[in-house]
Length: 437
View 1 (tube, one colour):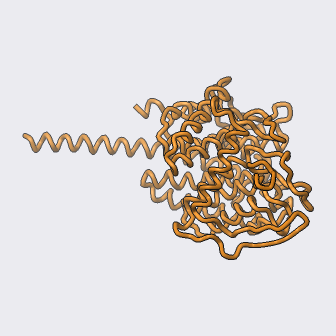
View 2 (view 1 turned 90 degrees about the horizontal axis):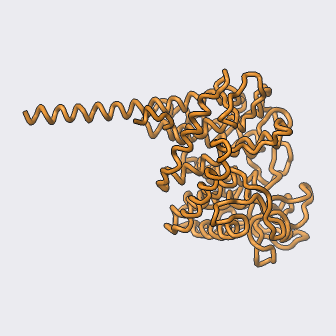
View 3 (view 1 turned 90 degrees about the vertical axis):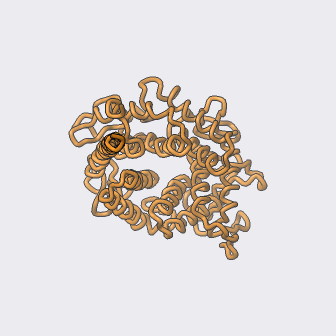
């Protein structure tokens, strides 16, 4: 009798495990289906970079159908997230499929953007603003982690150094606002003019979109840097009208952590309100300004979460949670869904279209806060966004960025806003209340 009871109990456990595995496969397949629809519509499979909108037949270049250089890395992240979701569920077929896609997207972007020569400031296929480069630093560091690509780690370290220290070829003075040089701390957003830049000055713009991504980039490089690496013995050196410059090819592991902490502390004080969790868009001459944007909330959340995981300092986690709370309780309060900051007076302006990628960036860093830092209280908000987005797709399986509204079949949709739903689903595939029970 005891044997029969144990056997029956074991069979029950097996059935429960089987149901759990079946459920995981179902919700993952939902996510893959939405993601595959996104790729069918927007991926230029001849080049493996993404198109700008549904009206574009090919991603030729910046001026002809290609999505913005700074948004392409978000799409590479999506492919890696699909691979990781398949791996988590033991789905070897889809893991191989999305690994291959991840590599093709990364290689396609490297080929298109001048072999990632970060000192080439060509405004069509090159690099002309600091945060564009730093977004790619983050994704290349992730590719080193997720895909094991050593070439991507080397590219990430090159791009980080180019942002921080400047370029001998371009002649800019670098994004880092060195306090020792009277520049006040933090990271500058741009160099101007693009061809023959002036030196940055303390009152120039220091945006959230370069400061918090710099923290994230430094933390990811801290993770992938060799443990016992010594400082670069042969850094690049040059002299121009603004002084003498030194640019290491890479930093030590400890130095990346120091850089992350320094920029985080400056940016939190000068761009953020740690009581409310609100992140301002920019600081000019010590005066913060600009309304909060969901992608800046996201990178602030990610910066704090990564520093917490590395140091155990609860201050970073508390700040990250405050940023998430503000994102949801204040910024998303009107309609209960993540806000797309488009200009409704001119929704098809390129700058307005690109803002559609903001929720995908936020999702990337909420993944760290929820799944790595154990903050499950935010899952239901995301699940509700996904449920609305899934029900409001058009005939091509695409949902525009406003997930509480039906996407018509005949409206122009940017790849940016359309990335919101698949990005959320690949990171948080559990969204159906009935199935979860």
